[in-house]
Length: 478
Image (cartoon, rainbow, N blue to C red):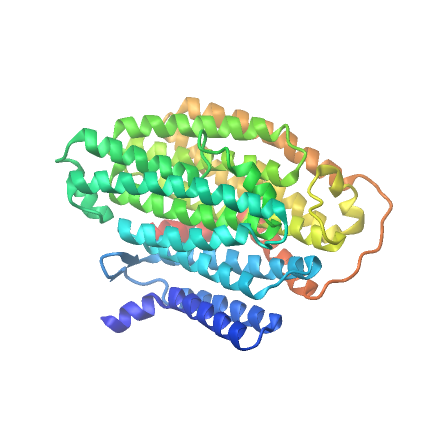
């Protein structure tokens, strides 16, 4: 049985070994290419290990972790997102002239924490994964330390995230005091026989803490500032790997503990979803900085995802709502990573500096057609345009909402989506403005970025045009 557990946890072990090897290599001889190679190899080995053990029966890897197809699926998604981040970051760091070794190590540590979250079935593992990922993300946001804007963003995220973690821990403590359990399934069994006041207060505090980390309204105020101040590849990592891992763990807890039976919680989540969709989209209208725009957009997308949880609370255990959540997470990851990767590559080609204002993107189609194509497709997918992954994701969410007759949240989704089309198309229009093309210098490693771009384009279009294989895969996982 011990061998089976080790095999099941081999993706996480491969990433952990990658951290050790990068750290050792950096201590012996600092060589950027070696650090990059070790990081990519460890992530590729983790990816291979996840596929090699899938599909298979669930494995109880200690009371804290469970290795099932749900965890394996998101291990693949998170690892692929980390690979994209490492490749895109390398080109960005060369153009900015910053140190690379510690950056790669921090990305691996954060990815390891995210993978632990995907396997968590106990609040101890939940907190362990959350803090491993969080500590690395703090440092990544403030990277490089010689610029004042990343340091400001890192300090803001550190202080506010610490406060939210304290609220989260207090919620865990209240639930433990009420039920005597911290495992997700055991907690669900005990909830029916305990004090509603303690359980309700503890659950509320946990959702407040997670609401900050997912940047749900009204806990969203940090998002545009941190997105703007972070290095662009880190912003993409924060918007995808960090948020997706947290939502994956939240979805497992919500499902295993049968929290949909709490009517008050369902009502609160419904209003959180409505507020996040409307506030995120309407505030994005006022943004000229693309990173702030995508920050507000991510707030809205988290609101879309909450509708699936509300459906679970309205109808009970329904396969459509679970499928909608999983599909939307995958589509959101691919689309958001593509947007931030394109922006990062554009900044790298333009030289040091952020170049994130909308007017800075003018003429991208004429100077960098591939980057402009990736940016356009990613924005159209985030808007939910047909033939893209985002359209299928929103279709799933709408279908589940119709099944539960959630007309008010669906009206907010339609209104928010209509608003989002305007600000996404405004950016696309800027890309197409004809300007005088200026030559740019080639950057080492650009071919890797081009391979990543082609993969992201393929993923967004494949999920939108031919979604049946992934639909069947998600159905089997759940």
